[in-house]
Amino acid sequence: MERFIQSLWPAVLVVCLATATNAQSFRVQCPTSTITHPNAANNNSEPAYTGPTMFTTNAKGYLTPTSNINGAIKCQQVSGGDGYSTMADGTQTFMFSFGPLSGLADIANGKAGTQFPSVFNTVSPNALVPGDPATTDGATSGAAPGIPSAFSYNGAVGLIPDADCIAGNAAAATAGTRSSRTRRASSPGGTPAACGARSCPRRSR
Image (tube, rainbow, N blue to C red):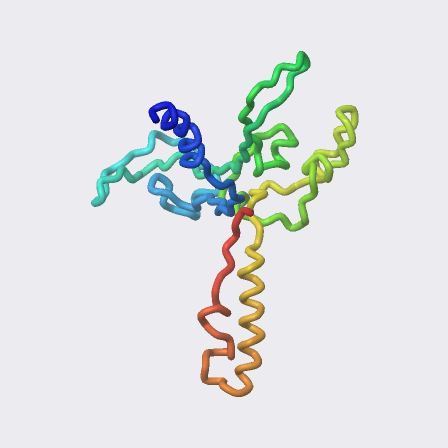
């Protein structure tokens, strides 16, 4: 009986530790202001240094700047992944790596990829294609790197319009237009305020 119980433990552990792997949708965030940089209007450029930042403790116990607020907010979106790679001698090595997903145009031009909120929080005006920025720049090989200035997007790749929200708003606007013919008193403009006035957040899929 004791041997039987011991033989069951591996199976029990496998069942208890097994978890489902699911794709996730998460929001890409780059705040326009923080406790140490409270004025959003001043966070899209770095002021000239005139002296050390002076702090005081606010009513909630946090240190907040009172003068000479140095620096600004800069953000970087990164991707991460893990897996095994096979070396030239056949050895398999476990790797965990990161890659940038914002500031790509600057990185392609040899600059830092961190961006101010006003740049980071923008959606690409054109559809990105596999291999960007190298693909848009016309790179075909290491000998032909392409024209670095062709790709100009520095925002976060994960920032895309919420298609579900946009479709919902369009449907709400259409329904509101139809209902306004019979019930104009339902809401201003004939559009249901609960859906038609809803903003569409951007998210990473």
